[in-house]
Length: 244
Image 1 (tube, rainbow, N blue to C red):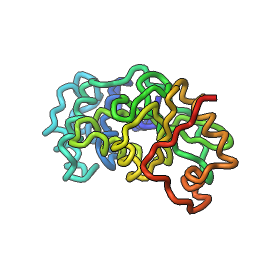
Image 2: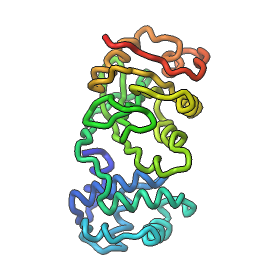
Image 3: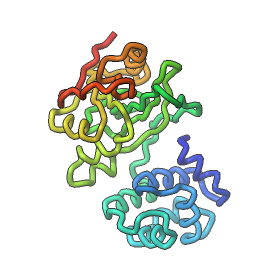
Image 4: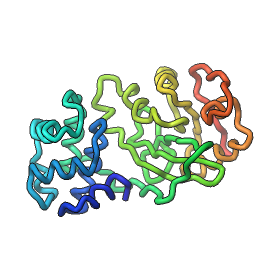
């Protein structure tokens, strides 16, 4: 269970576990949303207990009224984001095989935030433009931990899906993918993220172990991501890390 779902379940409002998951996923589509406040607003509007049946009746107009009335998010929120959020409230697009984030996360100086393109379980098996989710890891000398799972569903409803996907991982230092095209690579780099191609894919943690091994003596691009030196960013070509 991820942190957002745990937050939804800990608000004190009667709520079904699946309903909590739907709300947590919907909240991800709404910029700046606070999950606990979102639960309270929905509870006030739909009446508690919150159930999947009640969430399935929420419309886009109704959701907009709920979040604007409680000042949870910017009233100018994009309509596509509202539509994506409503689909999650309806129970559509929930990823049953999504891995559960780790409870303990490394933090502090020298921790890399890495996005992994994934389509199944906890695997690096996705193309940047078509993967169904990004697994967000924290990687340090001390260990590797999964912190979040981010669906790409809302990004794919936008005019430029590659820009939206890049924005989805803009808080990360590194993106690991099996493959990525040149134009998409440029958009990822503009978002401040360094793309790394790992064509062989495989288990995400095993792939990240190779990246972790370079932390003590990082190449210039990784040193820059870690803030250890002001090395110049390498063009628009995605780095490639071979297997083994």
